[in-house]
Length: 177
Image (cartoon, rainbow, N blue to C red; front, top):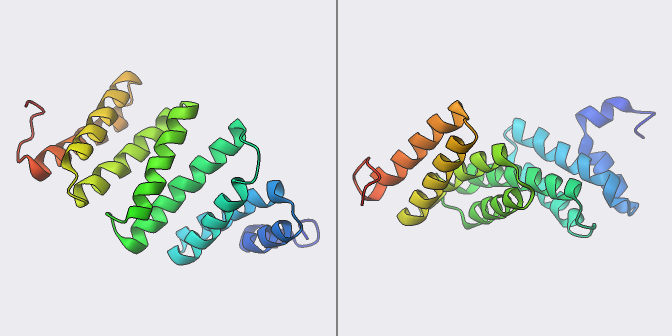
């Protein structure tokens, strides 16, 4: 199918994912579920994206834990969190679960750029759940991480996130107690 219909790979990756999955070829199906989820999100078809990404995560759980599989799960979890936030809102428990899992995976493999993004998602998640101390801690972790890697954009975003966390409940912008 890949060789005879190369346009299908780009336009309908879920078809290849489904065929590989039904054939029991989970390893080959994974990138196509991931691509299908990404394409659906780009079209704002978030329910479809959630379905594809969840299917990919289910398959991935049956594969051995390798660095490549951990990176794939991280990508899937981050995409899933985004789609869940778009469909269910900033405080959706499912989105929080995906973000927490992504944070764990980032810490496991040392993915600093992705961890900054995950923490940037966790701050508004916690704020909208009125878990202000958790929001502050995520913002502080984000700030410390951005400072340690000298990432100017990450640093600016971390200041914004921490400021949001501090002002949401505490009504102050300084991090002093």
